[in-house]
Each structure stands twice: as structure tokens, then as C-alpha cells.
Image (cartoon, rainbow, N blue to C red):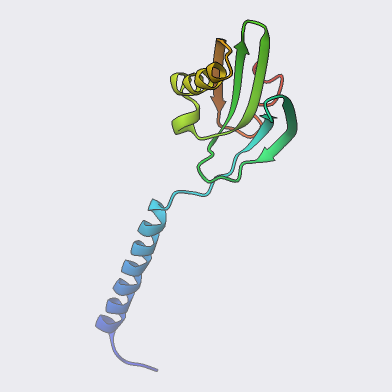
Length: 130
């Protein structure tokens, strides 16, 4: 048996404890990997609605589910559901500003716009907010 004594044991114990604290502290600042599942219904080719149902959001920046309702020329109602990035996709001024630019580029008029965001699985499914 080794007889290095108590000081040697304490030194290694303290070094091991420091290493554990450093590792735990490092892991505490790494953001958790979180994937939310959202209902997806999008528009492709300007006219075709694609209803994918519930999907897992794969972009690590996607942290919320969103629903966007807007009306063009007072008669064309559009609904889009998808994964969102809360820093950008949940602000009404930003989202509706982008939609307005797109609609006006097509010689239309945006008459209403309402983005909604939530942060639990499948929280934007049809019927949940209507």
C-alpha cells in the first residue's frame, strides 16, 4: 500500500474537485439542445399550400412554434404555421413588414396581419388558438 500520507491525498482530492467544478461550470454555460415540435403548413410556389402536420424543428435557432394569419386585398386569407426563431419571427412589426413588402411587390394590399408564437410542442396546431 502507498504511504504518501494525508497531504498527498488532499492535494489530489482538491485537484480532482477543481477539475469537476471547472467541468461543471463549463457545462453550465453551454446552452441546452432543445428541439420543439411544431405544426407546419406552408405556402410553396405562391399558390400551393403544403400541410406537413407535426414536424421536429431541426434548426437549432428554432425555439418556438408560430402561426401567421394575414389577408390580402380584403378577400384572400392566408394561414402559415411553422417553426420560428423568437428573436425575429414573433415580432408583429418585423413579420408583418416583411409580408407587406412581399404582397405589395405582387401589386396587392395587405389588409390584416397577425403573427402568434408559443413554445411548447404542437402548440400551434389547428384549433389550439382559434
